[in-house]
Length: 228
Image (cartoon, rainbow, N blue to C red; front, side, top):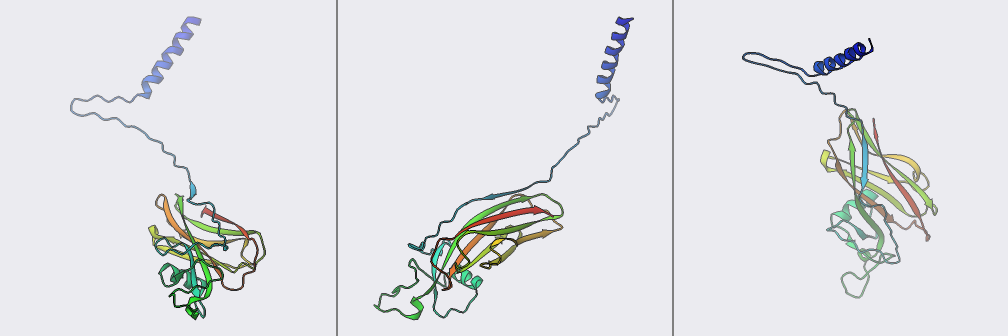
C-alpha cells in the first residue's frame, strides 16, 4: 500500500509537470501561449554632481562667462532684481570681478568710474539629475537651512533650468524667513511622468548688495523629489 501511495504521488508530480508545458500539435499550424507577469516599482531618484560650494570673499573667484561661474561686478546704480543680475552676469553684461568690495580700475586709466565699483554677485552651477516614473507627476523642492551665522549675508537665489522638458524656475531665499527649511518649489510636473533621467542645470547666486555683515555663514541645500 505504501509503495502504491508513493507511486501515485510520483504520477501526480509528473502530470503536474506535463500540464505546466503547453503543447499544441497540428497538421498545418500550431501555437502556444506564454504568460508574462511584469512588476515595475514606483521609483524617484536624484543625483547631484557637486555636494559643496566654498565661497571665500578674501579671494573671490573671477567670473567666467563661458562657464557661468565666479563673481561679477554689479555696477553702482544698478536697478535690476536679483534674477536680473543673475541673467546679466550669465549674458556677459556684467564685468568679471575678483575683489571684495567690488572695485577695480577696469580700463586702466588710473581712476575709478561709477561703472567700475558697486556690489558683487557670485554664481555657482551644478547638475541635478532626476528620475521619477510616477504616472501622475512629480515635484522638485528645495529646502535651504542656514546652520551658522545670522540673516545678514546679502541676497540668495536659485535657478533651475529643466531644458529636457522646456521648463525653468527661479526662487529667492529670503534671509531670516525662507532659509529655515521651508520648501521652495522648483519644478512640478502634473499628470505626466518624467521621461527617464533628466538633467536640471542649477544656478546658485549670492548677491552681496551692501546689506551683508562680516562673518561665517553655512547652509544646507536639500533638493527633494517626490511623486504626486
